Image 1 (tube, rainbow, N blue to C red):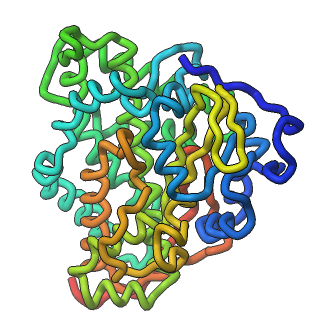
Image 2: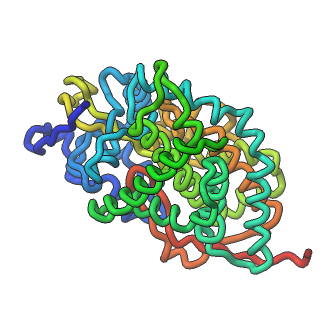
Image 3: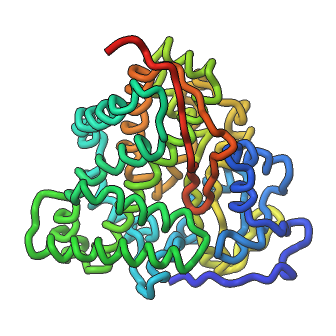
Length: 411
């Protein structure tokens, strides 16, 4: 296990030291957090040391796409093991699988799970995904307003996720509350409380499926083998807990940023209404601009990056939005251009061995949501803009999103 070390600011060269918490800095920018992040490229050196990150200690923060890509691809020098520290909150030792593991075990776990999240399998879910989106939108389209998170962005991916997992749909509000508390809070005790509730539920489902397997995800996990043996209880917990967190929060967060962008940019909203065939590339561009995931790596040995001498055990924050705003990687990176085209692949689903295993499902959910929203909801705008809050942690998100529009005269 790679153990993180605490580094005193006095050990860091003054020109690389920044007495900031990057997450708090972005949270203070609220709905403009990503625009604020883009300015890091003008304000900070190639790599700098932030003295605090949430309730963690200090971290190194590279800002160039090339450095971030190299770190993501170099698991021997920069380990993913135990980087979230989630299980430690409740005195346990399992890792989120596969994101908190390194090759060769990571490769084995990915090979096991890849078929469950393949493009073909996700395509087969499309009718169900569309049905959920249309049903939810139909519930408020004629009202002329909605609480976006509560009436759509939270419910939509959770229902799809629960069907995938074979877990009770009626527990969706409770699941959402647990996941949001764990991800958004900066209070270690509050985070630990939510983590314990999730872990107890997941462990109960694992035990049920070991006794009585069905055809759901949990049953697949507890009946699978790796290296010719059954998965341990810790391995099963790590897989199910990760899918729980990923399935309940990341799509919700992306929906919030993407739809708020359309609400604030009526000309681009009109562009999609006039040209719905470009929605897939618009989603891709919005994924690039509004990256939400910020993985952490731990150095397994001393290593030099630019002027920074990173010591064994020090943490490195991989701010994927900084990679996406690097002008050496993307032309005019601080502009949202739906006609940008394929070009270079963005970093929002990470890179290397840890490229997001659920990316095919996430893309499909985002594209379908935007298509059905554009088809059923007239031109919309945001209300109560001053009440929108940004939460910044391992996953960025928005709270208090409210939209309004003039209902159409149709049925």
